[in-house]
Amino acid sequence: GAVVSQHPSRVICKSGTSVKIECRSLDFQATTMFWYRQFPKQSLMLMATSNEGSKATYEQGVEKDKFLINHASLTLSTLTVTSAHPEDSSFYICSARDTERGDYNEQFFGPGTRLTVL
Amino acid sequence: GQNIDQPTEMTATEGAIVQINCTYQTSGFNGLFWYQQHAGEAPTFLSYNVLDGLEEKGRFSSFLSRSKGYSYLLLKELQMKDSASYLCAVMDSNYQLIWGAGTKLIIKP
Figure (tube, chains in turn yellow, cyan):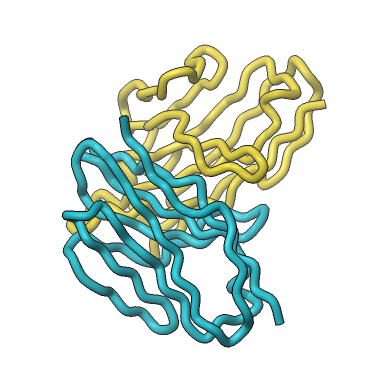
């Protein structure tokens, strides 16, 4: 159990276009989902915390108008990178917390999306 | 500020034992996690410690000392497939994960 999927796994786009990444919890409900970005040889950087039915909470330095997050259901959150530029090229990873588990708030990670902006 | 420190890189020999240390300073503590991450892949959960002491799970063990702000991940009987980055992460008082930069473990035959 506790599987998280991401789609697409890889995307290449032209500069100036928008890209949408989906994150789904397949066998559990996730009130909270997290979006991370990871540059080569660096650790995960939390971009935003996505709560179902409410606005996402963005980390300092993350532009909310550029990285649009929608968490419309308990199993789906989407991240849209608007007007993408080459510096947005990165590995984007989502994670979800199983809200029905009363234990240690483990986050389950999706497989990640490799975004390349030309 | 919040800070997680772990070595950048370690090298060990196949079949041997290696210990990866992690020290932390965070605002609040709701547990410490270790994750394994192979290149180009998402992290996978290895262990969780919230109380002091040693948690053993097969070839992997994790230790926590809350008073010292210290944890280690112990890997025994190393295999080539254990070559990966190992990420230490602490859940703070807001239940957010604070991540270390990761330790790249290189296993040599």
